[in-house]
Length: 321
Image 1 (cartoon, rainbow, N blue to C red):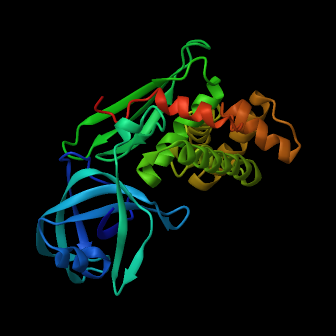
Image 2 (image 1 turned 135 degrees about the horizontal axis):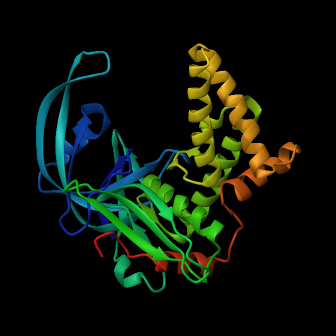
């Protein structure tokens, strides 16, 4: 077991192990002073702060402090403040087992190195270190051919990266679509997609999607459909809503209505057309589920743990192959 400073990272961005570098700006009272005192050449454990659960995820990346410079920046009010610009170089994945708070420090004397590539057969994971997931898409070519692609940006080079897993004969099209969004959510919040974080992310994603259906119908707001913390969900219901809303709005403007009138009437016409097209029931509770499954092609049915392991195993460990 190792002993080192634990650094919470609020944006979920961690350096890629084995030499990946990222540069971040730290306020002196929010990590900067601690990093400066630890010093260049020393290792710290950077872990994601999960905003949804408001806790520190126990798995992160051991990173070496390779450079620290002090600069002056402007805050949101335009005032000048001193910040530290710190470059971290990833070493390896690790997890803490217990934490100790000393003054303004967060320390762990029980940091365990993890080699996920060696553990992959028994415990498959997808790493979000070194890249930032931005979106994804699910293709359906048949029950045996359902490719799911997650894409994003390499934090070091700025180049586009992606990974694809074919979930054919493992889950349905609707389940694959839900898994797509859940992987993105898990990588953004925990920088790691494991069977556990995948299950949790699927539950969170479908809860938010159902809420967008409920809000869109209750308040006649087609534009909120499919908007969750993981991004915008591309699905038949959302795509139709955007198409109808744009068309109805343009027609109302051409008819001489002002902006507010045009938008209000376009929203009403869009929701009416959507409910007719999809054949949604008037029963409010059932209508939300129909919107999720029939309109958005999502299925949050809880699967066996072994299925989630196989799902993750269909993807590479990281987008670099």
